[in-house]
Amino acid sequence: MKNLISSVLVVLLCVSCNSEAKKILNELPNEMENIQENNELSAGQKVAQKLADITPLSADAMRKAFPKQLNPLHVDENVVVIGQQIIGSFGDKKVSISIADAAGEANQLAAHMVDSYALDEHQETQNFKVVKQERNGMETLSDYYITTGKSEIRFLYHQRFYVTFSNNDNKVKMNPDELWEAFDVNALKGYQEMNK
Image 1 (cartoon, rainbow, N blue to C red):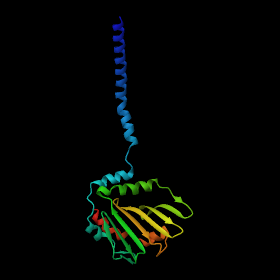
Image 2: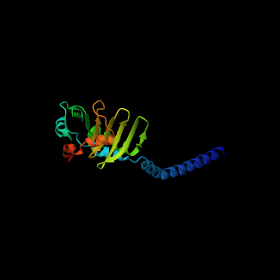
Image 3: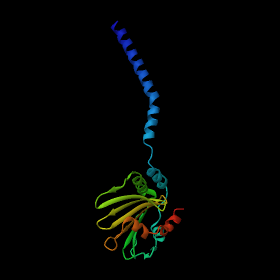
Image 4: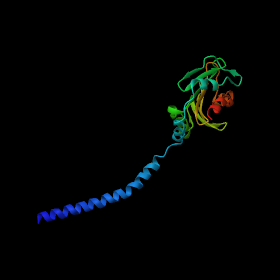
């Protein structure tokens, strides 16, 4: 009799577990779908995915496309290429520009810029402020050190090139609007041509 009761309990336990297992298996696809919806890629990650399979420009191509002049300021002699980034200054180091090719392995630079613009709010203290502003159709982030007159503007050019433009506050003081006026976005056309 004890064996019969034990057997019935084991069967009931198996049936109970089996129905619970079926319930879990039936609900699992819905839960997986919810998880996937919550883990949707950010706008920056979508841009990064597109750039991941693109071959970065060579150092020679980066140099060839680099601006020779920004408005009245001519490029200084020392233009340096480090990996996928080129850095140069203009007008005897009054302003400088850094252009990083966010293709290939550097694709997270693009993701960072796009997502930073989406997330960053206007921040301001007595000595510093971050300005999020669309300029000439491009989403820009600017850091402005009010007391020193130092500004830096960052943006993603043609969804590929991470550009940082800044003034040398020891030579010329500028707020972000003045810095943008000193910048000529048309000077980057060489990179636009390389992006085709």
